[in-house]
Image (cartoon, rainbow, N blue to C red; front, side, top):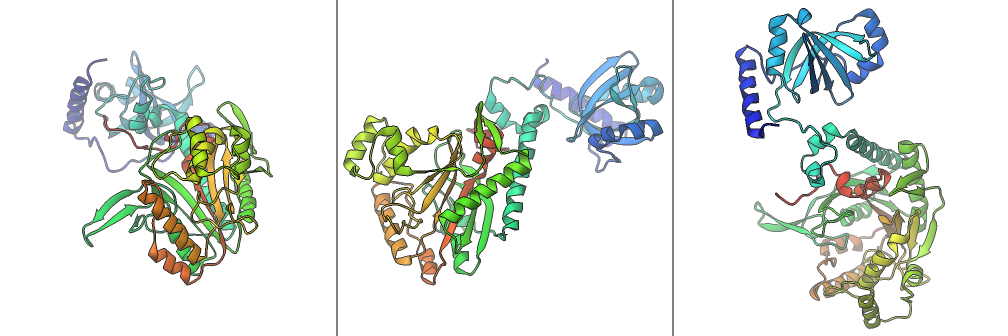
Length: 487
């Protein structure tokens, strides 16, 4: 293939010839009256009646045979073969097409449908029109690129040549739509809360910081919508949810991207046990709508979402996979055991954070079938209520499937005095160097002091869910434009 610059130069020359001939190379409108998908669906009646139709799409191939040219065009719904004949178009128009149209251009084609000798459904072109001239050539062999990151950088090309990728994003859209449908049917209403926040909170994460010139104040991109959604519970909303972007200034891997899509919902007068049942109901609904079955394949292994799912205590998992008894071991001894297990400890890590790191490395990966991990140690979730029967543990659960944490949920702490003490503990470990600690939020505490009903809260990463359900090895496969290191 000639150098890209040379190809681009020649295409710009063709663009000039199209314009000089009195045509608009980038017209405002098209007379297309059928999507290719619909034309193929109605092929029998359209071909029998010889009805003239107008299709439009991108040229994917050009095959010249004497005085005819075959081309495949694609409009986003499907592709079809079109046929140009010199004796129908006339020599001048036929030659103009050959001289000035390239693979990658968008074209409008008017004609009638028929089947070739090889039984291929085809549009015989009576007239054509340029819709957009492409200046850069499409890759000849997109599949099998050694540089996988190039697919993410140029997702538009990935979508053209890889229909499986396009299907994943169509499925993503369907799943988000069905999550909304489910919650709407359950009586939840969708709300929106600020993305720019004066105090970040609602999760353990490092934030992105920015500055608002108009008020000369620093703000943070939200790490979670939680604290604002709970303000709405104070205000009298009973069932609310939000689907939107969150931002965390942390490491990137197959399960993490700096900006990601989250759903959180809050249910007043409910507890974490009721929320587990609703979570099972939600997943059953999603799988039925998207796949018509409860079972999926992920990483060549089956995952069956048939309910009820197993429930396992957090401390029991640690004991099972590491022999460590969290109920009996102190913080210093746990640090020593963690180092023996190859756990990287950071400044400010306390017993709860160390236990969480051990769990993520040795326990979570073993949970393949849907599992509720319940009753985490206090300190792991500063916004969750303690169990009344065991104040050292939280009324909390995480849903894990395929070794991936999908959901974090708990009975919400609504005692303003205890919440203030929890925030104070977080401030202490922040000062020790734990950057992901939650910060003191006086405005939220004031809201709590006006009274918040008991409630259960649910948070789920949409990208992780889609990656699992589409058997994708990384969430970058299901984010249209993931964050990339600049070239």
